Amino acid sequence: MSDLGELIYFPVMAKGLQLACIAEMSGLPWSGFTTEEEGPKSWGEIKASGIAPFGQMPLLKTPSGQVLGQSVAIANYIAKMAGPALEGESNNDYALSQMLMAEAEDIYSLLGGCGLQTWQTPEARTAGAEKAKTFFAEQLPAHLKNIEA
Image (cartoon, rainbow, N blue to C red; front, side, top):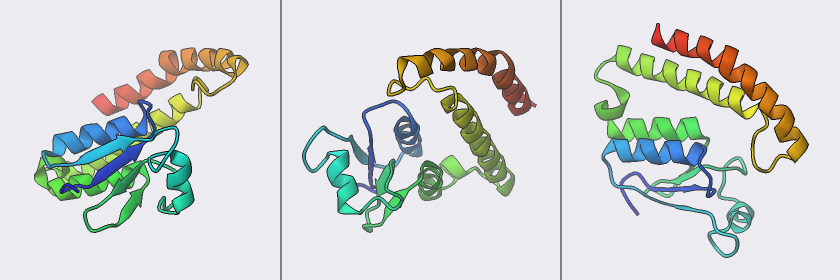
């Protein structure tokens, strides 16, 4: 196992991708895998094992054997392990990064609420496309303006 641990997520570009990017930016060694259809690396077996604290992913197995759930907790753990490289040089840097992470979660939730996920029905995705137009035209610009300010 590596210094950060082992990241586990589904084979989609969502919460797992952001954590892999954060782990890579940390400069610390880490490993990871995406779930498979069957076998010990399948979501069914991982979930049945009871190791997922909240019965969901992403997961990070730390070198000490602790298993972390929740993407923000995992991101914060990685930042803590990396120190100033990710937490910032000062308390103000840290506070700003935490505020921006919370805003990113808000934006992610709004986008997720559009219902564009591939597992949605075609009807839901069509309705979601209309929600997404509003999101990109009205909601997202306001959030980005606040971030820039």
